[in-house]
Structure formats: C-alpha cells, structure tokens
Amino acid sequence: MDEFALINRFFRTAANAAGPGVKLGPGDDAAILSPTPGCELVMSMDTLIADRHFPADLPAADVGWRSLAVNLSDLAAMGARPRWALLSLSLPQADADWVAEFARGFGELASSSGCVLVGGDTVRGPLAITVQVTGEVPAGEALLRSGASVGEQVCIGGVPGEAAAGLAAWQHGTRSGALVDRLARPAPQLALGERLRGVASACIDVSDGLLADLGHLVTESGVAGATVHLPALPVSAALAAAGDETVRQTWQLSGGDDYLLLFAWPAGRPLPDGCHAIGHFSADTGIRVLDAEGQPVEVARSGWNHFAGGGQ
Image 1 (cartoon, one colour):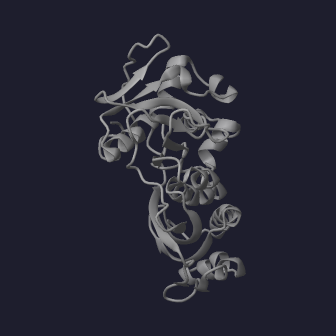
Image 2 (tube, one colour):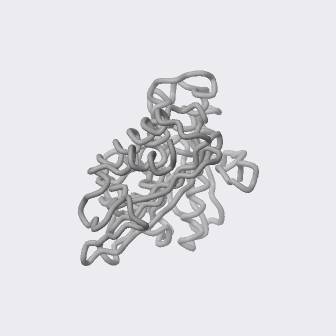
Image 3 (cartoon, rainbow, N blue to C red):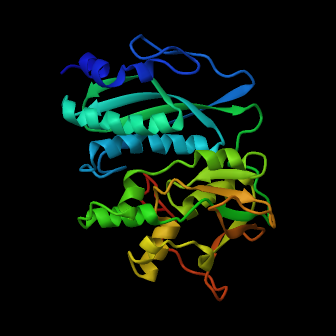
C-alpha cells in the first residue's frame, strides 16, 4: 500500500473532511480553515519517537491516541478549545493493520475532543509521529506560563506520578491496569483549562516532570522560587500500591507524561474539583521540596531533558 492509498483509506474520511470552520480538508495541497470571529488561534506541535516518547510495543491504537493527547494537553494549558490537527507519520513499512489501529485511536480522541484532522503526510522511515494542533481562545484570555506571584498557590489538576509508575510497570511486563492506562492514554485536561481562564495567573502541563515544569512557571513569571510540600501531593490507591515511598516520591516529583495542568491560583480561593494545592510561589530563591516536618528534601533530578541525558 503506497502513501496515497494509506491516506485515502485511513485518514480521508467524511469525519475528517468536514467540520466547523473546515472549508477544505484532507486531499488537497493544504487545508482551508475559518477561525471563529473574536478568537485568537493557539498552535502547538510535538514529535513522538518510538522508544523515546512511548514504548515501541505499545498498541497502535494507544500510540494514535497518545500522539494527539500530548498536543491537546498543550492547548489545555493555554485554556484553548481544540479545532484542527495535522498529522505526519513516518513508518518503517506500509503496515495497513497497524495504521488502521493507529487511526482508530487517534480518531477516538479527535472525536471526543472536537478536533478535526484536516491534513498531513506519510513518509517511510523510523517510526515517528508529528502532530500539529490548532485551537481557539477568546481574544486576550489565553493562559500563559508567566503571571504567577509570590504567595499564590501552586496547584495541580490530579495525581502526579501515575504515568511514570505506569512506564515502570510496562517495562516489567505489565500490560494492563490503571497506571498503564495513564501512560498509554493520557487525558488532556481541556475542560479544566477553560475553567482556569480568568483566575489562574499562570499554567503549564506536566510533561517533563512536576519540578521541571514548575521551574518553567517560576522562570517565566519572574518570581524567585516556589515551595512544594510533599505531604500535600495527592496519592491514588493504584500509585500507593506500586512502589515504596522513595520510589513514589521520585515518580511524583520527577516523572513525566502525566499531562496534568500545573497552575498558579489565588490563595484562599476554592479550587476546581479534582485539583490540589501542593505549595506556593515564594520570595526565596529556587524550588524547595519540604517534608512533613518542614525540612528540605534532596531531589536527585527534577525531570526530563532531551539534551541532558534524560535528567535535569
């Protein structure tokens, strides 16, 4: 099956060819789109490489879901609503069964999130997926990484560390369960992102590790630092059963791929459901982690960095 047959069979469907604002979808040299009046466009793009961003033996449907999810999470972090996606697939061979499953997983999340696939490309090469997404946000209302102030709460939209625990489980042969599901099919927090608009002063999605991404909020906001309280980190039953306290602490503080929203929130203001206050932005320089007695905790690494051997 050649490139054009793959596109026509799996990606040029009625669902992808039409949608709100889509004047022309897959099949031409480029898509033609009409944004909603009064909205600003928000764009993001990520490349996923087998055995670096996902296990090479992850089921194709999960790879499809995941490749879109990590991009939609960027839109969630900006408070944007998804509109359109472009997809570029690099495949070692034209495996119709694999592509069919990939397209199914990709399509499931695209449909549930209101994101329409409007074009892309396929090439022969090592397995890699690049997705570009476009969303919309009312003019002037996008969430940014900058804006946090000293005294505001550091908050997170769920339980960090579950995806890292899921990866560890996968590497030890486990192929099912809540933690593996968090790794294979992350759920971009799109509704929460919209809920945070106008209240959260800064926001980012946790992809490289909680401390690493908190560092971006600190740097971009121009505050001196932040403090994270270990006892405040929420722990699910599945995570609690997966490892000892030291291992779990590493997963929660340094593990990536959670795709939860991490944000600055006014002190004393009620949090959205499912969110947790885990610390505060501080006038003290640097990011500190404190235990139940208020003593500093040494953290070996803060998170993932592609060009620093995987750690920071």
